[in-house]
Length: 305
Length: 259
Image 1 (tube, each protein chain N blue to C red):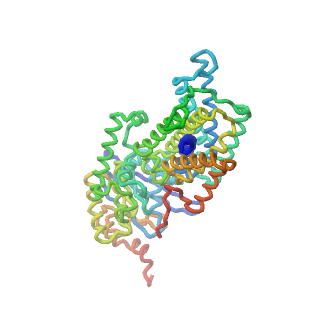
Image 2 (cartoon, rainbow over the protein chains, first blue to last red):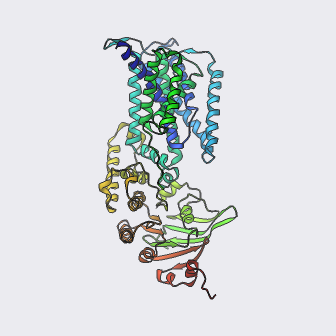
Image 3 (cartoon, chains in turn yellow, purple):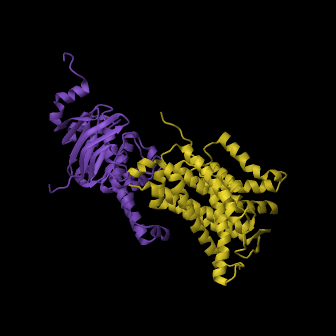
């Protein structure tokens, strides 16, 4: 029973990071029908911005780049990484995707793959190819919870992830920006004829998605402490599977998909299947594609004749 | 010329490759005028709408909406100038509620910032409340208010057409462009629609340009009619004059057998 709860909690921890990344995939897909492969690398950049941000702010605040754990530092680093990735997301869209808006979709898809390689190997050049140890931004404590012990970092991951998902949900379903997004995702041209500045809406979507990826990156660094320029590949693929599982294009679906993948993986990792832990997500992907291609929340599109 | 025309199109021509879809199209519309645009299938009527609303850019000619040249404007900016439209093939946002559909139509009028929405400020709440209220009022013109929270796709065909008109009106246009609003409606529904178009014009004081194949509707409500055939304007004038114009009759029915 103890280990059940433990696995469940660990699964929710990594699952909420998958969910944060999956939201970016699903939002961009919803609005442009584009799978933005470079998104997972924005997540990686988010983690690195957290790494460098911690040093910069430590230097500024304490005059030394040795990181002293603390909430002020954590929030500053989070804000810094979110801001950097927001700008990066904007530039991705503006430079790489917007010129291809009216080109066949395959052109943007190939561009996305190219951009992803650029970040992965460019990242090795800029950040260095070796893994780095993400600084302890917050003190790690053990918390007793119904007979199991969980780390305070896990609780922070959950709370921060939930807060950002809540903000997103509110923006998408409660404000005019969200309405404009949903209109653009239904029909780009019709939305522009309603007076909606579609290019700006698309930019904002990229910015929000990238900001969520940055949050995921910092939270990942906080809980797993090792980051490297290729870390986005596997995590990104799993997050993508999560988005497909929830029904790509569907915001709550991405969250549920992420949690499901995280939990299943966590249980698999603790069982005899642990060697195949990383394969589980892809087995799930194959099963969804076979039995429910539109995902858990995706609507089955029946054409009316 | 003291009153500004809501629309001035001069010598508007568009070519797709070698095909001239519309040539030398001229049309001026005064405020509160009801104008019909008719012609056989493929005459270029919807192409005219697409040029007026910025979906296509004309190859030649000038289009002014409320006196402003639309040459370098995007579709969304033309909507801001005061031209809103409906579509020949219904384009409601199917999985959104009726209320959301209409509020999206009014997007350009909700003026609150990011900060307002994140902070959930008073300004935000007031504007959103007003947006919802205005949307409900527009829906009630078309007897749709009781279904405000249903998904648009659950509406019958005729109601989806009416929802599109409500959505276009939410942009508070000076010129409403209706692309075959009566397509697929039965006789009773068409009569209802005619009354509603009149009501809209009088209530909001706007001009309406209608593409329609239903002659009863066009002849019944339009004050002026323009006939297109193969992209050329072949006649223009009062409904009675158009009905008896031999050129128009020929375009619709073909040449007389003994000609």
